[in-house]
Length: 94
Ligand SMILES: [Zn+2]
Image (cartoon, rainbow, N blue to C red):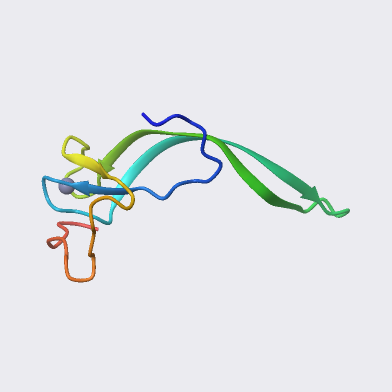
């Protein structure tokens, strides 16, 4: 796992090696944040300046396969992903 020094929710990319899915995953994560809760006099709340203190991805499952056994995380800026002409197979159900 990466050290939790991020202050930004880093966008992660995944790929299911079983079916080629690049776009649909169930991601279970724990995110610890600190944010400025700004209440209006009426009681309405607006949350501002949200800062991610820690983020842990616990589980990633492929929506098509229904499990995460073949899901791998793609490193940002590492492997080139061209989703424009790389289409996953037809989903069985959606
Ligand atoms: Zn899959």
